[in-house]
Image 1 (cartoon, rainbow, N blue to C red):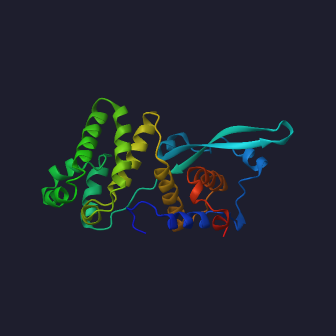
Image 2: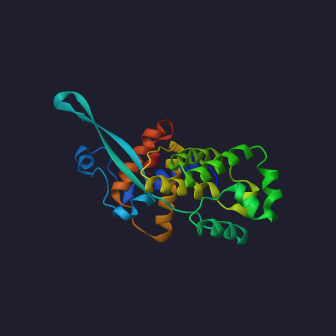
Image 3: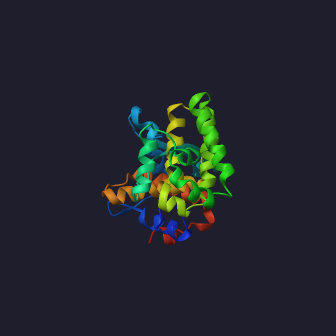
Length: 246
């Protein structure tokens, strides 16, 4: 799978198939006692909480004796996984901006690395107004108004849908994922509330799971249960129990 593209439905099926077992056992998401036993938030060290996307999950319980539904919100914490450079150009760009904990600002890339000016202008002609708006929000957000990083996050969600492009593959790397992660961390540090599109949350779940597989780390049952509930609620038409539990 290209690191840069929006997830396809077949890739979502892969998530559903791969994420339904913990220690060889199926994840249970319709057991009321199991769901109620989940803590509202996982135990994460206070100094590391900025490194997670916090997604509210509304859980619905049916109470037979009272013939009514009850609702409870629990929070899915998705650890952010940064993209890695694939070639020397990408390494040059990512190292330059990450060294100062800065977003990858396409306008600054063109100013700082003139050798990449023409390829970027040629391919981003139709979306340059979005990149310019992003750049302005980065600069003003970092200097005077942190709230402006929130619309910068939303702009990157839009820009991600145009990727992959040739400049991203050959020069910039997965800059939209890098910037989405950067914006989330920045907003978390400044305790600024924000939301993400369902497709973005889906993508962050996928990246976290792929990172766990790569590192051969066990995915916590709480994460499995709440991420399954999120996917079923966000994409009900694409959710298939038989496919999920295959």
